[in-house]
Length: 255
Image 1: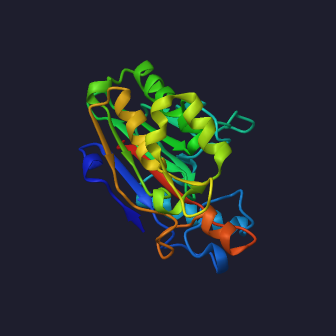
Image 2: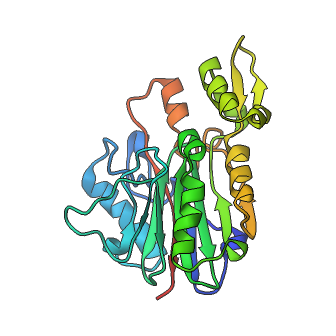
Image 3: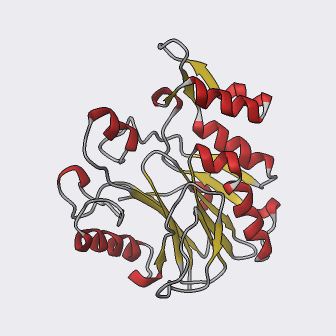
């Protein structure tokens, strides 16, 4: 049901990069689909989210995930969502025990952060746009605002689409290379003329290392390649399927 990173198996911290296994969804959403924005039945998705909350030993209302918009925006949270509360962001940070923060993915990079000394955690959703525009750096800054230090902070990248499965066109390539000349290293020529294979995991982990964190790790798991364990937006698109599920990666401080 969930994969744990050795680097985050720390006293006082619970976490999990949850797979698509262990839920109650059917069909294309089988089985642990936690995406309320999908076409899956709402009650079924809520049951799946409840199972995630149980695995992290928090109540369902204390498992928080934002309304993700592929932005660099980060929210610092202190308790369960309130009615009408602003939820649009691509990362969450907290220092409150008993609160699980998570993000949903289906190819983009899920990153969990922890400073176990300061008792501050974070969770970020980073596709190419978020990584390029600063969601990773902004998450670290938001953690610092709550007392975290970069040298004590650990960041782990969970299941993400791999370079071998992520083909992009010339416009995508040009945007990255024009942003910074060094970005050329994240591209390899594909079999199609004028197209490239993009290494999103390497781009994310390099950006994390550049922030000066104490430890950066990558689980080296590909969402596209491992259909049994992970949902994949790109795999769904290639097959012409009508929709796709989402998996969650979450972290909490023990109460």
